[in-house]
Image (tube, rainbow, N blue to C red):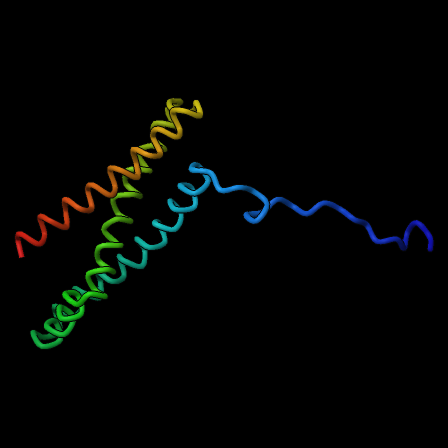
Length: 132
């Protein structure tokens, strides 16, 4: 077999199955996913307004879904996505200004983003239930 016809064994490009997940990579992926979820949620809010303007009966059916367990999970998940994306965006603004690049700072700010997102979601949910 000539040199030109031999198969070339090149290393594969690194991908998610090669690397051990780390907090920074997981939060980066979650930031992208929550951005997509917010886009879907924005369409859902538009749909909400469309049903509200259609007729009281249509709006009542839409509200019935929103108050069901599936609807509440959807709305709660969207609310978490909103808070997470907001908090992580603020974290990125600090990075853009040159702060928080040390590994311990990146991990600390990552955990703060997760904690604040969960707390803000829970507080908003409790306030929403009390107002309903």
